[in-house]
Image (tube, rainbow, N blue to C red):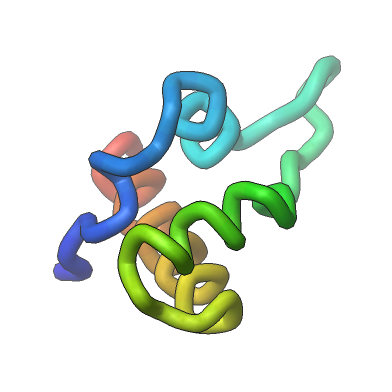
Length: 68
């Protein structure tokens, strides 16, 4: 199980975006975090932009696995 390190630092809209699975009419949704979010989280946590990006993807996988 992945530790949810970045989840508590996310705002409501970011949390909704990370948990979204489909767009309108059932089309699959691909999560791409905004650049300013990556910059903010890297400043707050001390991780690089790349580490933050991959940590967000790991946390998204964990959240979607728990949701099903």
